[in-house]
Length: 342
Image 1 (cartoon, helix red, strand yellow):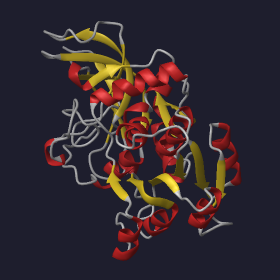
Image 2 (cartoon, one colour; image 1 turned 90 degrees about the horizontal axis):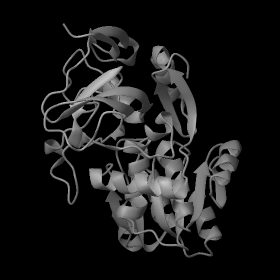
Image 3 (tube, one colour; image 1 turned 180 degrees about the vertical axis):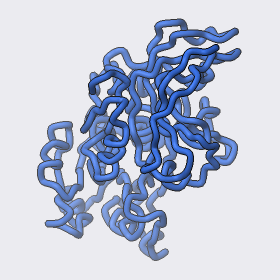
């Protein structure tokens, strides 16, 4: 009989139904590795999946969360990618190794519909993991698979970011702060928007050159134009959705790039056609990235000593409190560790 383990699960939708349960410890099948989970980071998507599935068809009981850092403790047959003792992090879009992505309906994702990571152990195909950065602890490494890779894809893989360009980053969540750090490391000038002066100051300490307080300057796009001498920004990371896209169009330079990343204000994008045509902007949706890009990000993190920003570390037993922190907003990431104390 298999040894047992603890895991968090829901039997129906709603984060309030999150329950700590006992389950058999899995055994790795052919091509799989058994990972002792060391840390899990939370994404806004994880709460949405708990609340309504976020278009994914879940099998109950369902174990949430997508991002994991852990240690390989056993190997299934034919595994050559890792050895026992290796530190690994999970990928999010499991079948996307490199190149152009397949249809999203053919690309299963961790943490919905695939069972998630909020468990003491997970058995997962070796192909669904990459080696963790050597320079980060487990909690920091767990923040890379979605938030870190999304920022990397938007700016580097797809955006071809170059030194001297101007990047507007909206907000100070997990993706946003990775974008600040990645852009600053690449020699770009970063402008961050926020409703908090304190958060702006903290973002500047991470490499942002300028901050725009959205409450004091609600027409933040005008401030971007002023800061760039009327040229506009090369890149805008659009985090809110809704009518905010119109402001991003007025902030970006003619022919510049807007990366659609977040839907914090609305799950729609609204803009008249003429401003869009007039901007000649490249509007690109960014939905994380392939395994190869995550491996590149890991190397960049080690080479540039990038330290992910963690706003809260919670013990495994305190997972509901971690989700509550996520819901009220965080400066950077919220992480659950598998130790008795955060």
